[in-house]
Image (cartoon, rainbow, N blue to C red; front, side, top):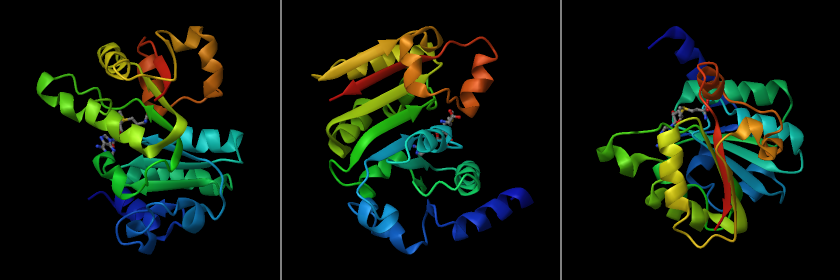
Length: 217
Ligand SMILES: C[S@@+](CC[C@H](N)C(=O)[O-])C[C@H]1O[C@@H](n2cnc3c(N)ncnc32)[C@H](O)[C@@H]1O
């Protein structure tokens, strides 16, 4: 493994704002984020497939009265977000290193106030449909984890994935729904506080258009 990654993984082991296998709270955090991790009762916002956690740290700066957890399987990407939170003195930020498939091992039913899913892998092949993070089996899980009237936000530059996800989410009887096919030209862009992600910048610079929806189950 590259030396840089080894150093980052070592730092992750010691970072208080990262939960990953081997840390005491990792196996006991479900239902206990408020009591044991953040030590307050503020609403919990979760960014899935967070990569470097731009929404996690970006929104944490805007909303110090909320808690933010970035979830990703890649330790080197989480390392970046963890370091940003440390350097910016953001006590309302945490990162969880796990597969999103296992989310229900880490969050209790109704424990989450809001979910952001930012630029997940498009997985365009038909045989990979069940791995798309907006597949019905994931949406059902998000619905269980979100508190009543909680929000699910989804942002992507991939037109195929957006069309698929729109059709999937609209199968639910939603209490709130708004969307745009061109976020940068939409008033909904205000909900993003100027935050853009690593993948977003990469693909927007190639001419891709960012699409977005926000829903409440
Ligand atoms: C295309 S990147 C987007 C990262 C970031 N949101 C951004 O916009 O820059 C997708 C991210 O999802 C993570 N990921 C993909 N499938 C995952 C899964 N099943 N569980 C956890 N993380 C996953 C990858 O590690 C990667 O960091």
